[in-house]
View 1 (cartoon, rainbow, N blue to C red):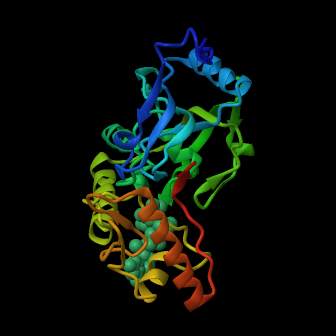
View 2 (view 1 turned 180 degrees about the vertical axis):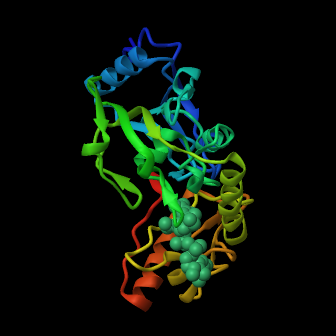
View 3 (view 1 turned 120 degrees about the vertical axis):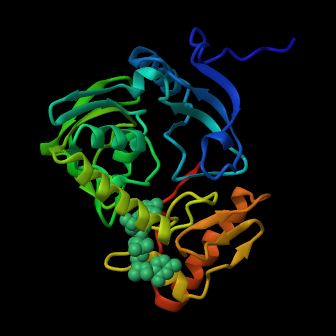
Length: 298
Ligand code: EPU
């Protein structure tokens, strides 16, 4: 007799799918499937699904817009959570304060805040991601970062415990924060009143800078490496003569060397091999270890 394993997510079938391709959920459009794909519709469902993962030793991954993510070709033998139901996409304005769910698209948020005459997140123009991902990574660039406006973050631990982190105990650093809890559920940010035309002008300038210096119309995952302190990873890779260098379908962008572009047929393993070569070459030339910025699953 064949024994059927009990489904660890029984009773949660509305929110849980099995063996789901992750490719369409990433900007790279490469990589394997998720064993479990979970889209909770509210906090209770998220708590329950997360507890089941804990009880069954199922590794947990949280997916935002998949813009800074490389999923391996084998995929993920665990549970991938995506907070994309409308509950996680709510936005509430209260004068200069904005409260939102973790699933809000940062670019859509910028458009809304600019229209309201609220300044402070235009530095995020052109950076794809959700509010949850943006806080987790402290999204930003040379014009500023998300952490600067964050007042409060609602988080949840694996066992379903909910708590709040406030500005006084939050630390936002270069592409990182001191939030340890697995799930970011939402946040409140504080912006400043300004003239909508002026904010729009600044937003456009920042977006144009990105458009002129980065390969935006390609399949990529943003910058692959973090900038070493005081230096530019892009410039180091460029100086190592690697622009245009290819492994399979993966190529170091000619436009900005800290981007690896995926051409048709590119696999995640092509990208990983290229990452390794870039690291080795830059170390040979400058004795600098490049640290990856992109999240690699598993
Ligand atoms: N440079 C080169 N060759 C290149 C790329 C850059 O010589 O191929 C030089 C540029 O000429 C410039 C310097 O390196 O003098 C810095 O380049 P850039 O102005 O493009 O900024 P960056 O440090 O490479 C950072 C963020 C970007 C963000 C931009 C703009 C990191 C790793 N990168 O890039 O973030 O969009 O500033 O704000 O922090 C990302 O995080 O995914 C990302 C793309």
